Image 1 (tube, rainbow, N blue to C red):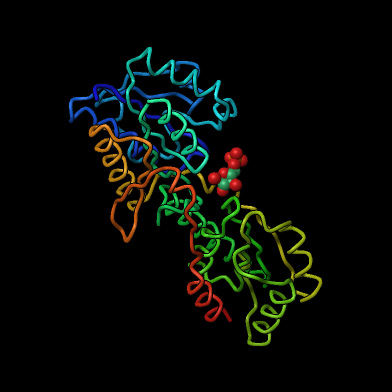
Image 2: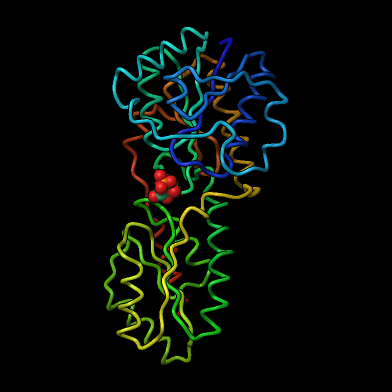
Length: 319
Ligand code: F6P
């Protein structure tokens, strides 16, 4: 393989730049040419490409976001879009592609591979909701941001004897809520994966109050419902003043943590090794902390376990 391309797709995640650096430097070290595709699959459809050399990825390992920019590309869901992307690849001598993103982005990588442009997916999303891998790039940084923010909220909740209801990202998954929730000492973690009723939440707060607790943190996973409404109900039923905070996109930014930089460097390197061997239609990730790869269609069918034990521990020690 003489020339490969790299793109970032879907929501940005801290560590995507570290993947770009790893892919570019590994490819150059193995004698391949590399181009960057701007704004995800849109750039492939429109031919928006930039040549990458070793220096083009200097000074990015520590930066959040993605230097190539990213997008969710509706046109790529249709065959016409995939055909246009294939044409760009052929016209520019691109034989292989690394796609950094989530499940939706991997479907695109499978479609391109089926048309002869070998593509390898690298999981990059703060949500950690990709079944084939134990870890997705950006997750650790996002959770550390949540911890930092909730620690600040705790200061003010403690000062006012309040309940702080904090909504965290995760799209439809509660992994950020669970892990950040245990790390901030949440009184209750509300996620879709574990059954709960508002009465359970209220009883837990009342039991804590009886036990001498004066302030409370409730972590709510995105997609559960209206956090303002949850705060209102808590205030009405417990008599404790409650405030809701939706952390939002602050969770997507910031300098990647050590874990994200290392994982990004490993996965980017491995993705290029696969392309070098002429292998595509794969997605790379971690199993038992080891770097592994799977067929994309197989990977998309996998199911992820929720860490129920961790949820039980969080519950048992939060009174
Ligand atoms: O997938 C990452 C994520 O931040 C989710 O947690 C969230 O649901 C979604 O993206 C938000 O998307 P957007 O940036 O398009 O608002």
